[in-house]
Figure 1 (cartoon, one colour):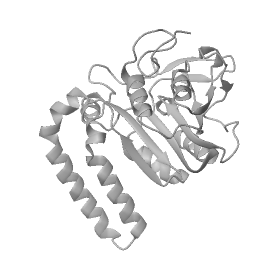
Figure 2 (cartoon, rainbow, N blue to C red):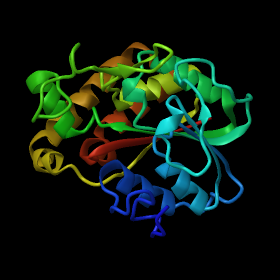
Figure 3 (cartoon, one colour):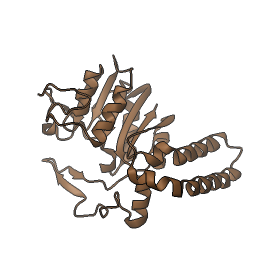
Figure 4 (cartoon, one colour):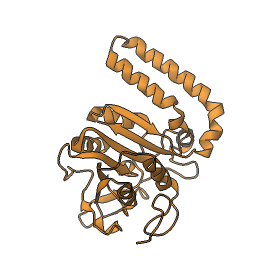
Length: 264
C-alpha cells in the first residue's frame, strides 16, 4: 500500500483523486464528528472510502458483493444490498452508499434496510450521478440520457455481468433524482434530506442565467396550485415546500454530482 496524502491521493494506485472521490474526500474532511462513529461502507468497491474514513477517525466496516475487488488489507464482509443486510438493527451511526443506488432495481427496499440498521438520529450518505442538475435535465430532454455526449443505458450495455451465484451487475439503469430520493427516504422513515454542494457542472453554470427564472416561477406556480387543494394539511404543506426548496436550490441545479444525506 502506498504512503500518501489520504485526502488527495489514492492509497492503492498513487494517483490523485478526481470526480466523485475528490468531492467525497473534501466533504468528509470538512466534518469533525468522525471519532468514535460507527460507519458501514456498503458496496465499498476497492475500499478507498473506507480507508479515508478510518484515517479521519471513524470505525468503518466495509461490505461488498464482490469481495475480491476490494484492495484493503482486511477483506470486506459479504452483503448484497438488494437483500436483507447481515447487520443488526439500530447498530450503526452512518451508512455510506457511494455510486450504488443507480444500479439497483429495488431502491426503496435498500433504503428501508439501511433505515433499519441506523441508530436513531443516524445518517445515510448517498452519492449518485446527478439527475437533477441543469445539465442532466437538458440531457434527458434531448435523449433521456445521463450525459449529452452519450445515448441512454440500454438492454445490451446495461448489464455488466454476473457473479458465480448468478447475481447480475447492472449499469446506470435506475438513475434517481433528488425528488424521488427524498420521497423514498420519507417512505422509509427518514425525517430530513440535505443536499451537499459538489464541484460545479460547467454546463449547468452556463444554463443557469437562462433557465433559472423559468424553473423558479413554474415551480412556484406548481407549488401554489398543489397547496390550494390541501392547505390545511400540515404534513402535506411541509413536504411540498421542501420539494420546492430542493428543486430550486443551487446545490441541486449546479452540482456536478448528487451527494445527499438522509437523517433518521
